Image 1 (cartoon, helix red, strand yellow):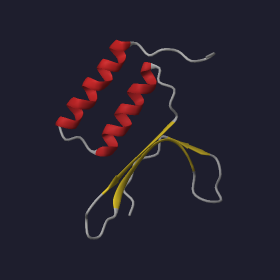
Image 2 (cartoon, helix red, strand yellow):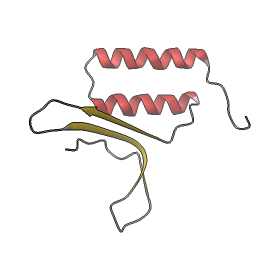
Image 3 (cartoon, helix red, strand yellow):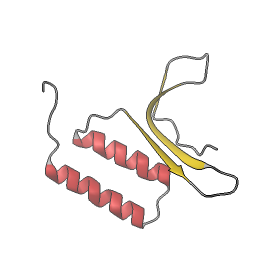
Image 4 (tube, one colour):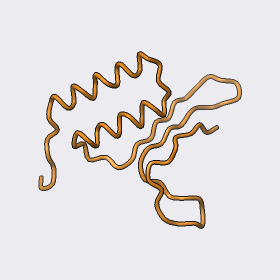
Length: 90
């Protein structure tokens, strides 16, 4: 396919190694998603957004959400918002 390039195996291995080490260090979800996506883009993976949803059994909070990429601004303001801070939503 035109415009599609292969990602080097050593870049994928480095991405996997970083993700495993960061996870074992106990990094926050937002740090993991941001770090993974930024490294994946740098390695040549053509992504522009990512969304991580984690369901929980917490009695008050239904789940957790982490977003990365370009997202619309608040209603009525229009435009694009590059790499917003990840957040937790109920």
